[in-house]
Length: 209
Image (cartoon, rainbow, N blue to C red; front, side, top):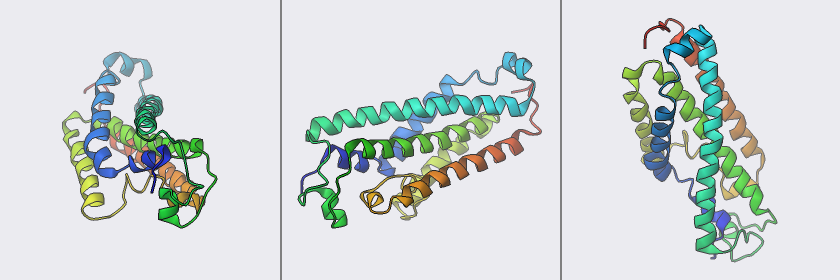
């Protein structure tokens, strides 16, 4: 079997690697970048908990897109350098054929776009949760506990709750509807997180952090 760059992009979504290294590091960097997002100046400017949370979430969307782009770009350079072939799913010697028993004329850009979308969704969920926890700094340790718990459930328990749930696999090209389902599920999680966030900050004294 011969792996292509597209195969490596899919493989690099591994929950253990992402959960232990990439996502905690991304959360830490974003926390540092947004440490003044609840400053007294912004409190006076917006004067509304909801407006402040929405502003945080809009920032998180930008950070998620940039982080996902940098991550995908880095992984692409590694994959292209290592393999030299963008995609070979129309060959019986490909990993795609070994996994699915089918051939595909899929373009590399579709594989990269699929991985990028899943990265954006996962980063958005992580950063929105970070935004909520930042309203109560003493609870931030729970965010790290949650990240470790997710890795444990997926790697040890074999339960796809985050990294493996929001990912693209070779089988996605056999059933494209699963990709749409994952996108909708991600949007649902984000809406739920927003609702929880509004509930959590409702009684928070915005003049005391």
